[in-house]
Image 1 (cartoon, helix red, strand yellow):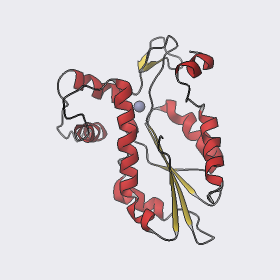
Image 2 (cartoon, rainbow, N blue to C red):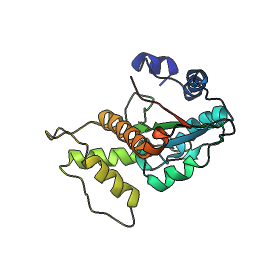
Image 3 (spheres, rainbow, N blue to C red):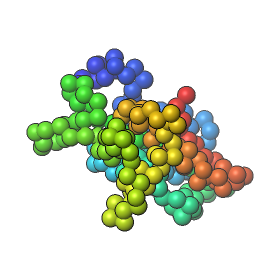
Length: 209
Ligand SMILES: [Zn+2]
């Protein structure tokens, strides 16, 4: 799909470099500058997300990694606590930029949830973790057993189970991906309570209007 077609279909879509540049512009008026803050970035583990991470690193420097399968935030209190001690703070304020970005594939023919990876002849799913969850939901039930050999997928399923529509509606992949964004955003806010309460810390968080 060409960038023009993409823009026509998703008028609010931004190339990742433009999004990264936007964060710089938007936060510059609030004291956030490269070198005086720490970005915390959570995306899916899929290598296709590396350009998105790289674009943010290009603007803000190396980020603290919150990534997990499906773009979920599973680093917990210990992970956030570690990041809390890593921000620069030379001027007496610690500044944090929280960014979470689940992903979704879009094939050249417009198929949602699939893409063609470099060197491959067949389309594959993206986000594969979220596609698996959606297929399980469409099949009737999520497997909520904690599998020690599949911890992140187990956590992903159980986290979604707590946030699905109570009327039993099966979400499509787009809606499920949006729910992943909401869940991940809420989790990073929940884990950041101490930073948000601190009088010497500033926290920036992207939330869709
Ligand atoms: Zn993924």
